Length: 156
Image (cartoon, rainbow, N blue to C red; front, side, top):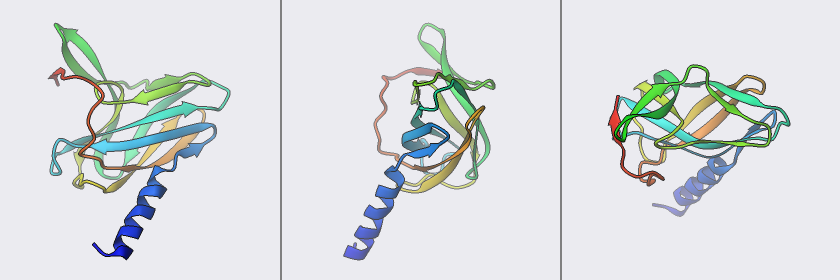
């Protein structure tokens, strides 16, 4: 890899690392994953801070790389078996609080991927909040990142 290519990659990574911010909503440390680069589903994870001084709610998400995008969570249905489910009402974020979108918990689910999730690729995700409106987030694909949760039995 040439020095110019290395410097461009470093600059792009630094730009992506910048938090997204709009109307008191700050998004930090976003990343996306898919089981394989050719998978038909993927998910995005991030920290969302509400610095607006009023309660808000994440109510929708969109991404051009997927035919369908939903807000999802996991719920235990029996004996440690977890089921992923759509949360149409979204997720509340109290004033001054933080919402974690993380593996094994709340997340942005992308179904019918129209592009492969390749390591280092950046995808654009638009988060829609009840009060703050739309926040566009550049989300890097990180297929190497380890999850923060233990192994779960999954039911879809």
